[in-house]
Amino acid sequence: MEKEQNKKTSSLNVLAIAGLQPYQKKTDEEYMNEKQMLHFKKILETWKNQLTIEINHTLLYIQDKSTNFPDPIDRAAQEEEFSLELRNRDRSRKLIKKIQETLKKIKDKDFGYCNSCAVEIGIRRLEARPTANLCIDCKTLAEIREKQMAG
Image 1 (cartoon, one colour):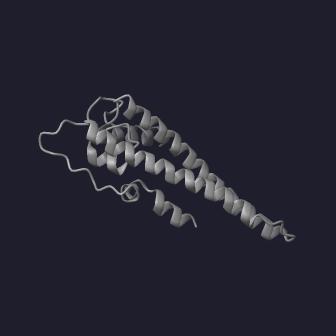
Image 2 (cartoon, rainbow, N blue to C red):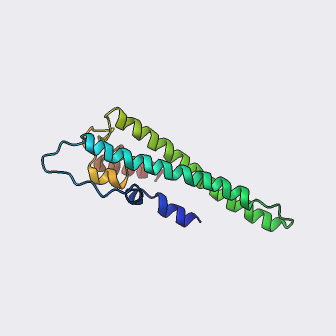
Image 3 (spheres, rainbow, N blue to C red):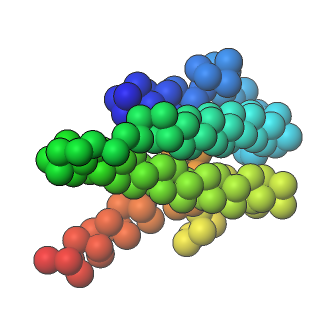
C-alpha cells in the first residue's frame, strides 16, 4: 500500500498527476511571471489535494482493518502497521503545511527566490521540489553545516 502511495505523491509525479508538462521557458521570458506562477500553483494545489486524499484513505484503511485480535502477537503486528501508517500520514500533514506556505508565497509574489541569498531558485529545481526555499548553493552549504554539526 505504501509504495503505491509514494509513487502517487512524489513531487516529480505531481506534474503528471496535474496533467502538466515541464515548463518550457522562453529565451526572453521574465523569471516568475504570471504564467510560471500559475504553473507552480497548479502543481502545488494538485499535490496538496493528492496528499489530502491519501490521508483520508489511510484513516479509512485503519478503520476498515481494525480488528481486535485475541493473539497478542497479531495485535502487536497490527498496531505496528498502523503506527507506521500514521507516522507516514504525519509526514504528509507536515508536507501539506509546507505546500500551504509555498502557495502563500505564490499569492504574495514572493515565490522562486532563495530565502538566504535572494537568488533565483530555478524552474527545474522548483519542478523537482516545488516547496524548495533555498537555491542549490545555499541548500548545499546548509547540508554541509548540518553534517558538521552532527559529526
